[in-house]
Length: 386
Ligand SMILES: Nc1ncnc2c1ncn2[C@@H]1O[C@H](COP(=O)(O)OP(=O)(O)OP(=O)(O)O)[C@@H](O)[C@H]1O
Ligand SMILES: [Mg+2]
Image (cartoon, rainbow, N blue to C red; front, side, top):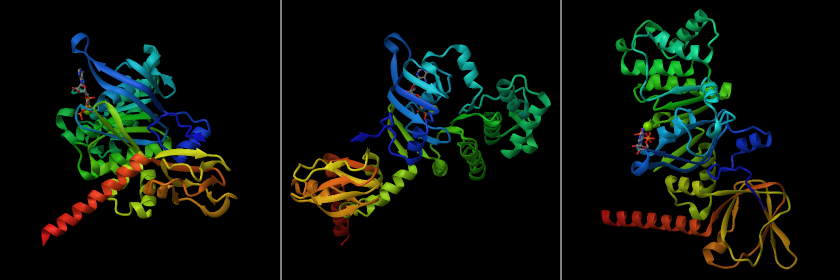
């Protein structure tokens, strides 16, 4: 069996990511066993624990998690604003854990920062604040051309009328938009945004999200947005949840939706709630098989439930291994042995390259039990109503 060749345990089967890896595309960001501590001596406190992460060019990541879970810390490490202490961290092909100060300076020119505290210069106008990013990224650029580009960018975020205003003459949301224009004006390959839409109304928030989406989808930039704003969740390719300094889940949104749809058609899971389905999708492991490989053998004891994500398999029975059925994308197998506690009642061989999602016996049983308690609860509440 060929295990998924994606190195990060957090990244699941994703046709696009797989294709990129096959084509030799490297991740824009890779973290391997990344840890981080604040303070020293007795006050030393660990805030990031053994994190693995792979993010590809063109991906939009939304990072969520409780206050104090380490989101800003992770973002500032990726943005080179803090030194990586333990583990490996690669950003835009550079190993940050062994980079020189000159490497870091160069790298920063390719990053767009949109941070919670806007860090605008009070003595500079909106245009001048935005132009600062261009001056840093392109020190030998033409000043008047840079001024024009800065004004254009302010126009895009809806501040065309306020280019000559200083931060004190602007509202919180307007300042935030200046910071966004400054973060994007130099066309960065990587955008790191910490709550970029927090102070914005629905309409300005949408404009910003659309800008970020364009940078990712048209220019292949990588975007990481830390946010609690669920109005912008729809822009995410992936949602990463950080809890107590660890990546608790890392979900490809579209893939999770597809898998949930497939699971919903499986009789044994038909009573799961959308949340239960999403949780289950999150527990699935992907396994890739070549053609003509055996997945399960008749007579063996059952330890997994399988779902076919891509490809086809043959179901074979008896001494002669007679083929009794074929199964394809969206079909599942292996549940009978788990439900009945009996040996496998058939063998399964792949007919072509196949990608399967599997669920361990324990997770399968948990899902069934959860569903049962859900049903019991509904019954009780219906009963109580009478
Ligand atoms: N400069 C610092 N020195 C010491 N401890 C810090 C420092 N910055 C953050 N911490 C601590 O590290 C932990 C993670 O903080 P971080 O700012 O990364 O969280 P966060 O997920 O961004 O939270 P929030 O959603 O509130 O912005 C917290 O316990 C915080 O108190
Ligand atoms: Mg924060």
